[in-house]
Length: 103
Image (cartoon, rainbow, N blue to C red):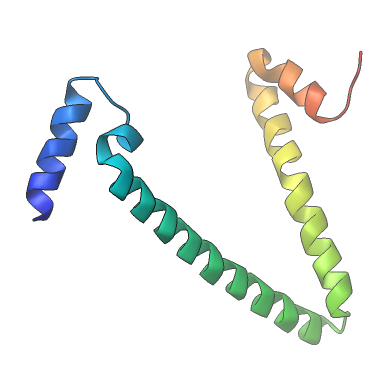
């Protein structure tokens, strides 16, 4: 059953008529969304449990570890854009806009 689906997907994508999300149809997109939500749920449980263990081992409060985690996760996208801007002059405007530069 999987092979005909993959053959149809290759045929639609090979003609350049559709993107992957258009080629899989409504049911395929619903399954992708469901799988993504399940993965997000499992990953968030793992993150929370790991943060609690870090707070117990390090002797910090759970709130402190939570704030550090949120701060890191909010700063990581800006850091990534800034690093990419170093290597590509075309994205320097995006890096400056991400930092709040109004010049």
